[in-house]
Amino acid sequence: MNTTQYIIVFVGILSGSGLGLLVGFFWFSKGRKVSDKVQSQINQKEQELNKVESKIAHAEEQIKTAEAEARATSKEILSEAKIQATEIEGKLEQGQARLEEKEKSLDEKVQEIDRQRTAVEAKNQEVEGLKGELTDAAEQHRSALKKVAKLSQEEAKEQLTKEVESEFSTFFAGQIKIKKKEMEDKYEEDAKNIMAEAMQRYASEVATESTSTIVQLPSDDIKGKIIGKEGRNITAFEQATGVDIIIDDTPGAIIISGYDLARRYVAKLAMEKLIKDGRIQPARIEEVVEKMRGEVGKMMIEFGKRATEELGITGYSPELLKIIGRLRFRTSYGQNILKHSVEMAHIGRSMAEEIGADPQIVVEGCLLHDMGKALDHEVSGTHVEIGVEICKKFKIRDEVTHCVAAHHEDIPIETAEAFVVAAADAISGARPGARRESMEAYVKRLKELEEAAKSFDGVRRAFAISAGREIRVYVDTAKIDDLAQEKLSKDIAKKIEDELTYPGVIRVNVIRERRIETQAT
Image 1 (cartoon, one colour):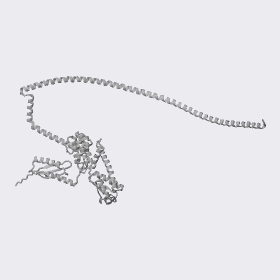
Image 2 (cartoon, helix red, strand yellow):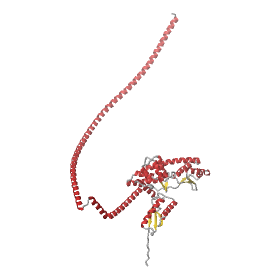
Image 3 (cartoon, helix red, strand yellow):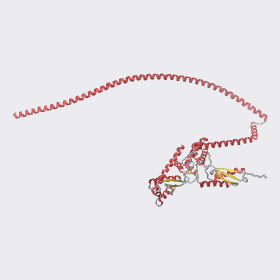
Image 4 (cartoon, helix red, strand yellow):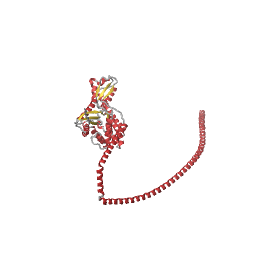
């Protein structure tokens, strides 16, 4: 081996030694750092362990304290339970004693009842024996009377009956007449009291409906828009609603005229909507009017619901409720028909309860009695006939339908409820302020009353008084005697009923006056 090779080997050994020293130093320093980190974690875990041990010790102390408190509380509860148990045992013993006393008292009462029953049975046997003896004695008495009078029992009864009838017939007839008059007076007084009480219990407001409705305008300038070019807008509005629009010099208002309240109400809503919207033209008018008709239809159902809820009636279909609600837009002599029907129902209920009739039938009959007036201008027939058909269509029970059919006595009244409905109708329509009529119709009705009375022979003069609720007739005494006077009053009343139309009741008063004057000279 030459020198160069030795040098290379030596250099290699030195390089390996240095490298080994470097590697060893590196691993030594790294191990030391790891050891320090592990030691730090160990110290941290020891601290946490110490804290846990401290918490465990504290928890053990709390457990011991809770156990001590629980033992003390359990002793108190046990003591109280023993006291309550003692009290309950005392009450049970007292109750047991009372029950024993009651059982003893009941036994004594049962024994007493048995003794009384035995005594009653003995008395009954004694009474039966006396009855038998009395029957035998009566038979012996009748046999003795037959032998003496030579008449049988039936012949004696018949003879006695004839003698009593012959002797007391006049007396009995007078007594029957007196009793009949007393009963009539009593029933009339009771009827007056019942009707007066019913009217007093339901005092409704006095309200009338007119044939026109006023619509307020924000300014007079809007009148030109309502009329439109060559009157196209107002013509379209009148054709769509079926009412008349009156535009005059009245500031800030126009008048909607028409006899149909429902149409007037639709027209009023539509006009207010158009004025608020500002677009007044034929196409828009038709659209708004149709929409308002739908709104009024919903209002009719709501009016019907309110009426039935107020009267406690359930089970009516929406179609029937709508017909009832339409009565809110109908009037009779200025009286709103729906309000009139509801008022009738309250009055009728009071009267039905007083006389023992069925209040529910009366209430339904009163509410539905004028239902035909909601459709009478659309369907042929009287409002009574239409109302009956509506009741049959919606399967209203027969008792209520009879009340509707008979409330104007178009058919004979067969039930007490129908009488009450007819009476309530007369009361509600005849009360002061309930109805009104135009001056022309009023004067015409009074003249018709007077002419009906003057058409009879023997009548000298006739005057309609008390707003047409009484007709006072003066007769010729030479032609009419007392008997004819009574017959004449009935004939006049019948003619008024058959030929004239009038609200309420009309009293016919026939006066026969005879004066004789003599001069002494």
